[in-house]
Image 1 (spheres, rainbow, N blue to C red):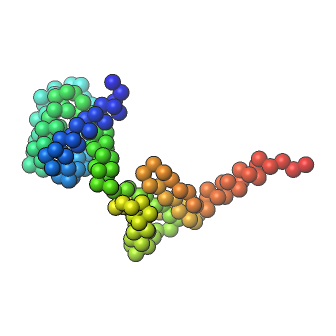
Image 2: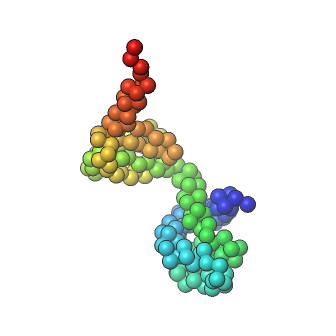
Image 3: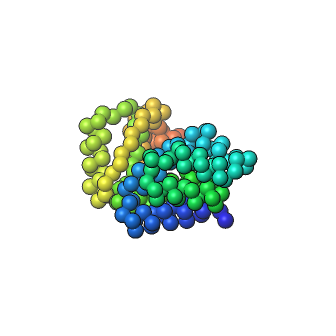
Length: 181
């Protein structure tokens, strides 16, 4: 089975169980923590290692997350390890987060600008996008001097590139395609 399909199925099962037990918010926080810990190189080595027995991996996950995550999340991790799918935990966490954002009507928005924007401007932008999308907006910003000016706005998998650098590239492309007689 395709690894991404595995992650989707496990995340869907965890989400539905969390929804049933009214623990969606808690499990979302847990999966954020799990994803953060599992992104560490040491944890990736443990997950990928064929030498470490599943029982030892289960003990490691239990000792790391016991008392820090809900019992539902800990049991889920134990099941994933027992099924030898621990290398897919980061993807499962991403899929869970995606389901959560859809469920909670939250849009993840990223804005890249040529120069940093202040908090007041970012908040105004967040509110404007929230009104347009009719959803809560989780806004992140970054600055990228290569944009020269303007911005690149990404909402989910859609992107609006209003940067000066992309406009210059378009002009350059048109000039190179135009022939002079």
